[in-house]
Length: 76
Image (cartoon, rainbow, N blue to C red; front, side, top):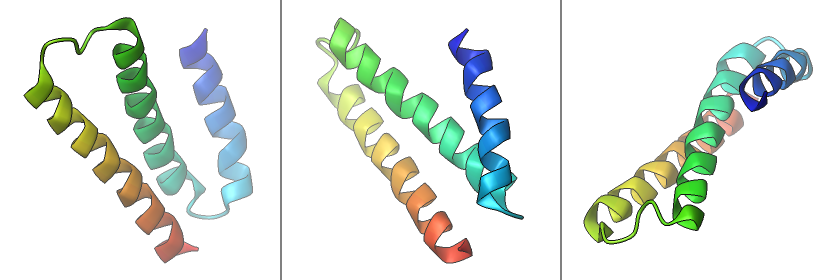
């Protein structure tokens, strides 16, 4: 349900983002999926006891978010 709902909202949002909406919107969608799943893993204890891997995951999510922000400001 969430998967299809996310893609439905992605389709609607691309119209509002303009010509490059599909490119920036797709990056935003994928980054948000990864960030939310990482947060959900933190809340459910999935990352318990794996400090080094968790730190790498957090740095990766931050890099994704920064990349989307940079792309958004560069293109618009």
